[in-house]
Image 1 (spheres, helix red, strand yellow):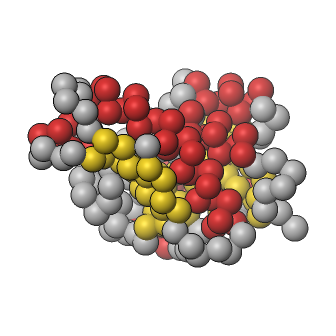
Image 2 (cartoon, rainbow, N blue to C red):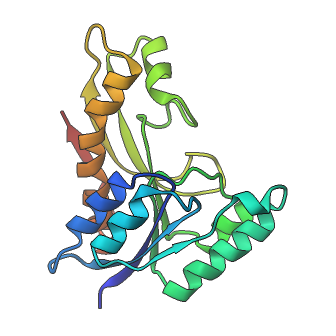
Length: 198
């Protein structure tokens, strides 16, 4: 039986689309929900057009009440009964309490070669550090920010004159290859790491 996958997004959902498109008849998993914290997330319409159920838990009314937001987020997920949760541009930091409920079943993609450059502004930080390579990582989500076990990484060269925007644009196609490859292996209980090079 196919594993059930819920994908959490906050924006346009390009990684969500890549994941969903890869979940074909041969895939060990299927997308059952796309959930956003942003009612204006462009990825919600894309998911609907792909025939995937959507839900939205707007974080803004919960200002100062993270526990309340996460409780409703958790309830929305439970309705879809996912085996795996993929964070795909979900721009909310989740608390250890929430993460513990889905321990071992939640994945995230991060735009750096972890453990380098956890957190935000990774492309500019890579340039500022004089890196000659840059990349992205898919990891299991733990209470440590961007610190869970790494399941796959993709690497691109940093070119002379690159800006942060240049790196972001050139890395995105690698993200779209890496995340689906990792999810396929994870859903199939294959613990071999995925490595991609530009």
